[in-house]
Amino acid sequence: MRPFLIAGNWKMNGSMKSCQELATSILSSLNSDSESVRGNEYLISPPFLYIDAISRQIEKDVVILAGKDCSASDNGAHTGDISCEMLKDVGAKSVILGHSERRQNHGETSQDVAKKAEKAAQAKMAVIICVCETLEEREAGEEFEIVRSQILTSLPSGATGQDIDIAYEPVWAIGTGKTASAEDVEAMHDFIRNILNENLDKADEMRILYGGSVKPENAKELAAVSNVGGFLIGGASLKAESFLEIGREALLGQKDK
Ligand code: PGA
Image (cartoon, rainbow, N blue to C red):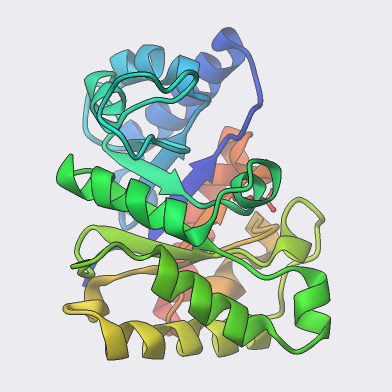
């Protein structure tokens, strides 16, 4: 079984200096705290421009660096885009795709996500595909259908569970302080697990991450939920102590599974 993933999405926050300081704090804790913290896998996704500098800070392989998007093309006339090879060049081994902020603010569709995921797979990068529903969709009782359609359309052809993770992030819980209840998370994660099992090879190896106001106070309970294989953390990943505390709480929660 793949380890529980603690993934920090720093979004568009910080400066070169503050991001390097945050990375220094996270790395020094992970380098020294072998027992309680190392049972998980850790990933950080700094703003694109700082990945190179932070990559140079990593001495031991304790954390994976991830981009927050990639181009579906290899190179050429794509102003503002960043290719998978460029990401790899500066040390990123993973890429987050289809975050709700990209779907909403950049009109990114699930078809776009599938093309990008295919390119990332060709570049031998790990991929986290985000799926979500809005509050209106949940209130209309459409959340399962929306998530099913996003997953099936966003997965690239030939996807297996080995290099792709799914992150379920209800939009109404992102950055709002409103976490989905453990029951809501369980219902959706079990549903997603069934979709994956029905449609993919090696589906068991695909982790299903939860994201949306994860913090030290709720990490243990959420990590104990069946089919929760990791967290995608926004706000609480911007402080080393809370990011690492979530990791420790998640270890406790996994014991309750
Ligand atoms: P949040 O963000 O933890 O601040 O809610 C999660 C995300 O958008 O990845």
